[in-house]
Image 1 (cartoon, rainbow, N blue to C red):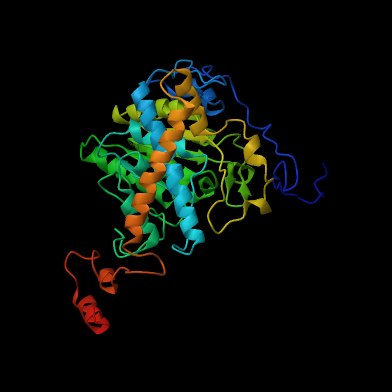
Image 2: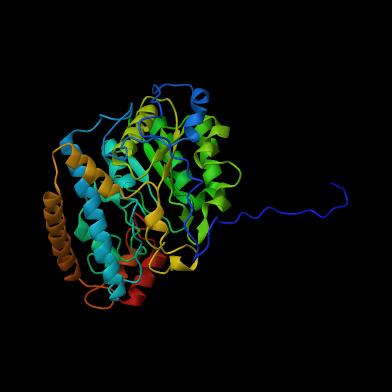
Length: 410
């Protein structure tokens, strides 16, 4: 190459565009049970290859195989199934409500239910999640009130956040769910800071950070890894790789690292990839990473390989940037169907029982929706008072805010 030749840039391109045939040839899927389970106190350098493979438990026949299997009882798996089904039903009802004009905005979890639902069951009371807008399963699986969640979506008079947040940006200290930020990646460095503070206090609670694949391009992601690795903070660093940030395929944010998990290797952080549509695998890897944090062994980075079946949000049209049949071609399947098949194979579930559970869960979600709507929706009924914006800011309200409240007549 001549020194006088013009410089060029590499601009990654997706493998397929709308109208083309879906292509997931870049997703290399090992056999279920093929990836070893290292000891919790393993030297990160010795498991570098786990950042390039995918940990799987459920095989194509619905069997749980390999060293990561066997951690959950049939009863716990059935509970996990119901949590995922509840989240999917909740999503469907709130999406309809948005289309009816009862709320301004909504974001589904379709296809990603196993990640947050299974991870929540691996945590202990008092642990704190710093989530994105697609981890409502952390609340569902911890028994948080669906009525309260819906009231927040509707921004009505019983909205726990008093209209201060966008719909779906929940918050519950009691359930270890830190306030969601609309600014990308801010929660990642906050999670590391919270975990460091917990260690400084000699507490026993750990933190879990959550981020999407696209947001790993933000500087806060890298700052969080610097502090987590330097101070060995008790934190699990989760990356949900659903193949599509909004209108952006993963080749842009991932760069030349090969996988998102590989980003952690340069910081000396043990990094693993897991089948995000396999409830058993998600739970097993979460349990492993959480134990590392709890035993003062430092952070773990986990990439969940999954697929965003639905639109990014109700403001998005994915048909403009990906083939309409792409979700059908996703090679890791549907997390609910896969767990259902496993339970049927074990003889503790059936198609009839599944249909009955669907009906029961739908009735429960509809009942919660009716109660939430009795307190108002976006364009009907009662709303938070303007007085609420003055509360919860200062322990003692300063004079200038008192004057403003009086001038507003609230």
